[in-house]
Image 1 (cartoon, helix red, strand yellow):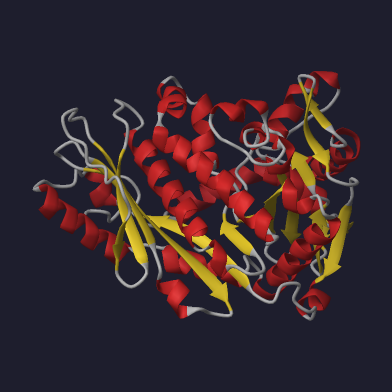
Image 2 (image 1 turned 60 degrees about the vertical axis):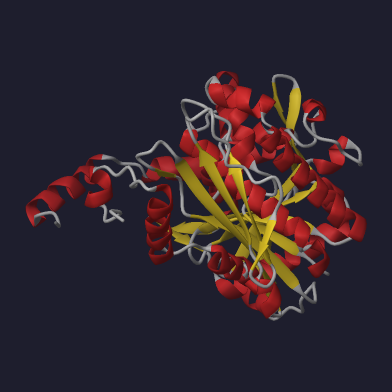
Length: 420
């Protein structure tokens, strides 16, 4: 039901009481001041958590010229993993299914048809174990497996989701590494950040991170992925479409007692104001939209980024290279046409080489310039891996029949049209 006009106006007019344009202008100036004075490098409690890989700088590239540039890579591959999202059943089972796929440009139909499927199951029945010890082939060139999630009384849905998603994604990438000859892009961060965040969430998830063999298997898969591509001298990167991190702004906010003010709710808001270009005319701010703007590359040890290149990782993973080679590096790209911000991540073992990081940067800038969004291989991988609503409904009905139970629905499922 839409709002009655009188109520819509009543709500909208409240915005007139909040005079904030002057504040936004101040925030832009503040963002640039922070950029110039605090990020080369940024310290937290005596530890360097962010530093330019080369020099601190902002760059811009003309959109029309980018679109006409030659490709830096002859082929590109993208990888994504879609899920049905965690589903609780009345018999106590909580299930999620992840479905990983790899795309290529130019297209490779046999590769596109290959899938890696992981079903993660949580049960409170201590006498049952649903795990499959080995991968089972199905179809022409696909494989599947069941993981029995460690029994916990809370966070069941978070647990099955992370285990299914990251196990499927990392395994599929490893199995098809030889199919990638020039560049592989993961849809999302380079490392399994959703899993790494378990270390700081409540009591149960940190213990599970410490104890679970499934967690260690996933972490080792990502290490092996970096090493496999490094040995083959094929770049590996992640393309982050939605930047949710708050590590930088959180650290900046802790410095407010030292004369700095950090009003941004997350890192994306900060970088947007650093990279946005425009001018004020007659009191109105006009954005320039001819160029993509971007930061230099940074080495990040902020938040979960610190894990794979840090000393504490030795307890969980085996690394062939020096720890710093696994560190997260990134640059941020701003597209003013739709006011979108993207992050490109890659392990330091690739971006330490200036030529390699410039090729990755230029290729992805061209892709963004043409698509006004993510690179085509990322969009294609997302489409291949996505489990649509109709398929999700059918799978849930199939599970209900197999489990001889029903989905544990509530009124919100009906309210929002999710009553399968």
